[in-house]
Amino acid sequence: MKKIFFYIILTALIFQNNKIQAQNIYNFPHETNKLQKSLYPGEKEERTASTFPLAIGVASFLYLLNPIVLFENDKIAGGLTKEISLGFGKFGEYRTTFEYSYLFRADLKSHLRAGLKYDFLLKKGIKPSNYLQGTPVVTVGVDYFTDLTHSGVSPEISYGYSIRNNKMLFYPSLKVRYTYVPKGSNIVDFSVGIILGIANPFIDLKIRSADYK
Image (cartoon, rainbow, N blue to C red):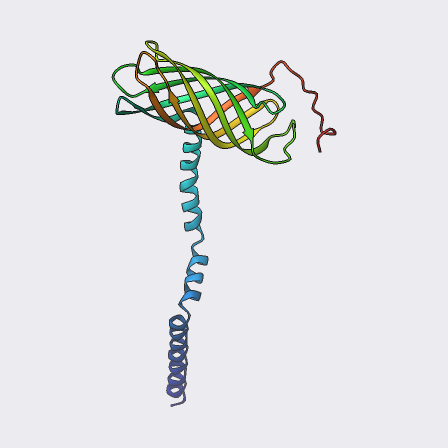
């Protein structure tokens, strides 16, 4: 008789405990969600890990090649372009540039440009340095243009954020350009990507850390 009474008491206690746990889950679902998230931390890590290669791929593509969209004769063409530059001055802000564009169309696929650019550094108080520094930049310039059949001239403006010192330039930017071709069709193009450059390759500006703190 005592054993039966003991089993009844034990069963009642277990039932009551389960009832309390179910009620807590109902009243505090956010706590349950936290518990579930803590039990499966790998899900967030997997999502982060899956987006990281995509970000690296996009950055690598923009580093190597830049997309360009071109409007000519009421037609739109897409392609890839790349600009490299040689800068002079304390910040390499006076730049000579060379750019090659390949267009996905039937004819006149190659565009070549050589230009002169000036970078307006928008960050106040920036000083020449051997260390890389970041600053917003507005660039104005003019290019000589040829598609190996026609020639022209193209003023341009671009905006971006440059990372530079007195020797190197990484310049992610958006560029808008108008090309006037006297014996051909005028062109408007837009491009986005990373401009690469070097500065003052034959000049030692004698910048020392002690001079610019």
